Image (tube, rainbow, N blue to C red):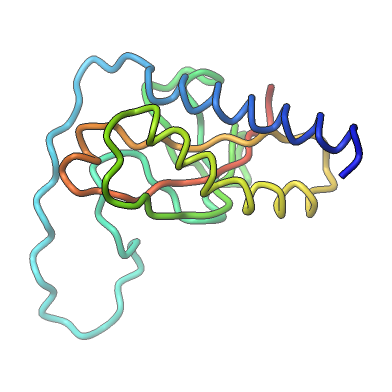
Length: 156
């Protein structure tokens, strides 16, 4: 790996950590309680909704969204990709059990998003993008939620 590639990778990881800290530490006027599980469906037909019901921002790959530190929104909010947006989800992952605090969650989240981010950055041809992720609040991790979203932002 050349010195320039190491510098770019280091910058991407630094931006990812800064964005994650901003998303997770952004003050919210009210944190929602954990959502109860949905009632079982009486229909065998597949549902177009996501397979996970999660009480915090979680986006499937290909979903575009607004980011609080870049737009006037309280929390990451999905928007159609043909409208102005700050970020696009590129991957989902599940954090492992046993993480004790937010720094451990941040480190693990960064590691889980590293490969999808590198792959997505190699595929992009329409300008610079920066790695980011939608964080998992500690209280929900402690309740057993593990899903995270890896994303690329379009603004610095």
